[in-house]
Image (cartoon, rainbow, N blue to C red; front, side, top):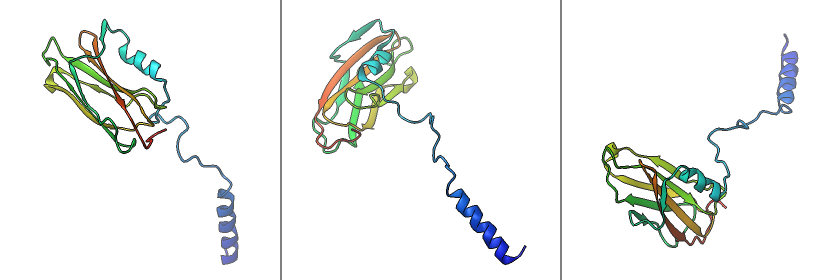
Length: 156
């Protein structure tokens, strides 16, 4: 093969790849966030609960009233409940009420954790309530809410 033929063939190969569509990511990415209405996320988190305790004293929330930026809103949850073999917190859910994706995290616990505690940074798309649910091993759900006023949206 001569140099000119090689260059023609190489140039044709490069030009033809410019018109081929190569997806940069899979269409059905399993890690992609799924938009879900708050009501549906709440229903999923409380499904099968024997009792839901609203404004539960067992939950201590440390969330700023008005964070500077909705991109990083610190959420700290402490649950005042025994972590014993027969009585313990098995899940904590953090659900914002007005984001497109209304589930920040679900954390699972066992008595081996010693304490039901969670610290997470959340993105909030605007002023809204943050709902925290803590489920016991016998399916009682403790609920607490905090109204958070966000000036700059994080994921709106």
